[in-house]
Length: 318
Image (cartoon, rainbow, N blue to C red):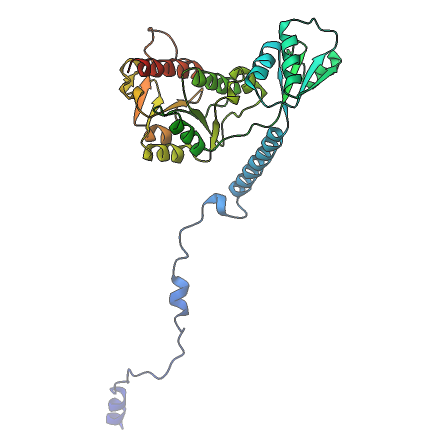
């Protein structure tokens, strides 16, 4: 018995197992990662998501207000601006004349030209004109202009091609002051440019202030809106135009601008930060203006006028 007990105690148990219930791979799949953690702005309950949504909503409201404002007619105020706009054939729907003002040659010409073009001439009390113009300096005259009709960048290029001259186009990169926009348009027209291109967003548009500063030249020169300025510049480059950007830290100065006589796009940066990074990288060359030591950089519209004048000079003697 003892031997039998010893023998039984020494017996080896089988390692063979019977059927067991498995997980069917569920555990393995459960251990798999679920991908990278979403950004804070993408998590529904995260404060960053709420802030991002609030910013997006505010941007949409701002865009709606801007679109509504742009769809409303505006008033060009002042005797000289009104006369210049009427002479230039600026589209207008009404000329408002304050009652009892002193009549001079400008008032007479504005009324005469308005009637000749079929524009309504309305006499209004001065206090009413003050209200309509939000107390701007109107000198008794205000011209109502409709929403500006922008061209397409391709139309600007076609106008340049049709001129028979080397294309010269001005592009504005983030210029937000309508006075600067108007001044650039005026310089572009004065120095033979074929059109102006502005970005669709973060840029001044053709408002009454821009009309006034351009002295009506916005009616003579096509102004186009680009959905994406960088892409538009690349498209123009593919059509054979060279792109130069005005920048203090430049490749050449305006005295060395050899590209002036060929097909050209002159890009003017914003009032504060200048050219944006993508636009700068798209430019074939950057150009600065030589100035006396100790003088700060020029206003965007003044700088544009200086370079455009140099381009026009080189083209005249070419």
